Structure formats: structure tokens, C-alpha cells
Figure 1 (cartoon, one colour):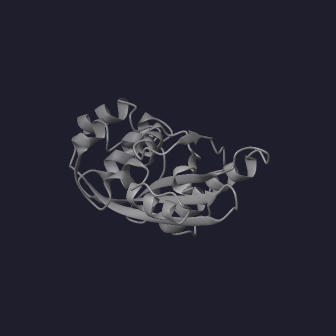
Figure 2 (tube, rainbow, N blue to C red; figure 1 turned 90 degrees about the vertical axis):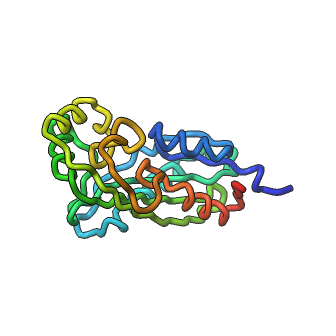
Length: 201
């Protein structure tokens, strides 16, 4: 029997955006939070940061699986950062920091990096990759910056904005994968899943 129709995905994330994107693939999945440390060495490149953190999340869920349970699954971990002029912007701690981040991004380009890690729950086989997308944010007035920051939409997101929400009104263009900016590059993930006998199409 074709294992492509038997395997499921374990999403190592509580992000509602990633959950919605995984659901769009029409593959059985479940969510298992990773609860991992998201600190990293300052010397790492953006590509290394997102791959390290995505792998750490998937590995943590793999280690916590019930040895006697159904392990015919692929664990998917993901992590996203925003980089402006070489500086990494994570999730803002409060509205003021969100406004500061938005102020630094407005009227210019920045790059969104998302790492994706897939771990075979049966064998422990591991595959990690990433995507990068350039985003252009429009020039904003201070009133607009404060209004968006106070919307709270960006407080749990790298770079302090959500491109799929109200933040769509402050982005003028992207070069690369849109879903990468949302938090999970689906085209990359689908290619990676094929190595684990999960074929979406």
C-alpha cells in the first residue's frame, strides 16, 4: 500500500498561521508544541539561525514521542526571522518595541528567512532547509506606525507585522515566496516531504 496516503504530519508549532497552512495541504496532521529554547549564537548567519531553530523544534518533539505510539509520521518544525541591514528582528516584547521595529522597516526592503526541518518519526532521518523572501514596506507616518503597533497584530510575529492580516496594508511588494513571509514556505515543504514518502500532488 502506498505510504503517501498513510503518513501524517506532526507540526511542532502552536502558530495558528502555520496550522492553517499545513491544513491547506489536505494531509492528516496534529499539533505538538515543541517548548524549546529559541536562543542562538550571535555569530550565526540568518540562514543558520532559522535552520538551527527549526531543527531544534522538530528534534524536541521527536525526542518526546511515545515509543509505543503510532510513529508513522513526519515532524515539521519551522522558524522565521526578519533581517534588516544585517540585524535580526525577532518578536517584539511590547507595543513600543513593535513601533520601533516598524519605524526601522518602513520605506525600505528587508528579508524574511524561514527555516523548515522535517524529521521522520520512525527512523529519525532529518532534513533541514530554508527560504528567503525580500519584502518592501511602504513609507508610514508616525500615526500609522503607532496605530498598527497598537493593533497588537504584530506582537507575536518576527518584525512586528503580519503580511496576511492588517499588515497587508503596509507592504508594497515581495520578491520570493509569499507563504515564507506568513511563516511556512509551502512549496519548499512539499518538496521536502517527498523525501519522506508524502506526496501532496
